[in-house]
Image (cartoon, rainbow, N blue to C red; front, top):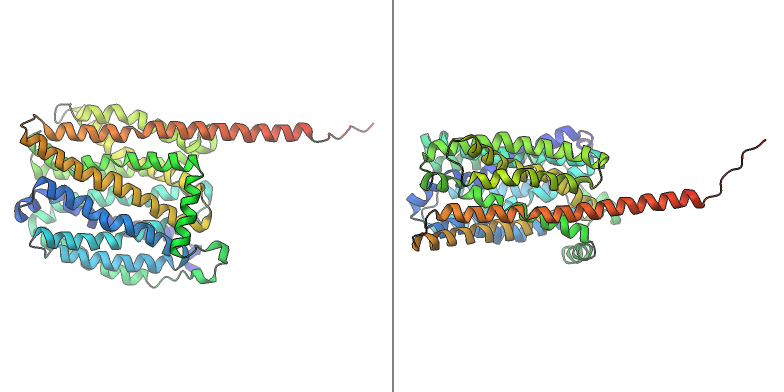
Length: 434
């Protein structure tokens, strides 16, 4: 397949698709105030809408589509998902009740679940292990760019044309892109049986066996899942800053969008490239690099919740929260990909996305919304501040996972070095000839 000879073009195409995916996924966040007012939603309903509704579909389908991508055409899997989520994004703009919006967003998640597992599998194939973290980091720039552009669209074009028109336009753009992607062939039937994934049930059992027998893989996935609780704070950022910090909703939406674009992108770029460099030169590899990033960003993220609005410390904490999770994507997924055979790459990515969406996104957002409502009903001062501080602390709890993973990596490298040294010592030496 000729197109696989152009990894840069492949990466650019997948990045553009990823950006659109996160615009469509996060556009609700930028319109949170309008949606809550227009549809009469409670905080609990809103948390359910941006969390559990998404996960009920995405969490299941990410693993399913991952197994499909390991067995069938990855480009066709992405194109089909893109068409589904685009049509349903447009349908979201026509919703007039909570139930209608739930149904539309459920199907948006179904379509978007196809992208990341298949895309990671493609990138892991066309980029070598030495460049894989960098390539993955560049691909995951789609998250901050998509999140940032969703807020910017809501604060600019959305303010002028309304949330419904914005949803309709995004759906039309995605449908056109889906047709173009479907033209790229990725026929997995030509691959040897050992290079292709097994049917769904068998593939899933094999992947779970690999996970159960690999403590390093367990630590990498656990730390990566925990750090995603940062995104609960993003889901409620506009509400927190408007209600408890007294900032203008439209103005702060544009600020959040800009910070996500600049510092999320910077995080993905530096995390991928610097993680690859660190892994080649330092003990602990990618895991040590990830532990260092969490340790540096954690104090700033905590200070953000208490610093005066508009102060340098306030903005430093906001930027750290945007930087950290994206900086971990390249090195974390590179570690996870390196722990499994090639035929399981998309499936393990789908399983990881499933766990992220269940524990960090669904349960995190739903529990946060419910707890905010409960604290507000009890007249507790600053309920949003207290709850979001708690989610930040849970995200920072990823640090022990990465430290333990780094120790295992150093121990493994030392053991390998000792074996090589012993092999050299035990081998017969050639005697010098006179």
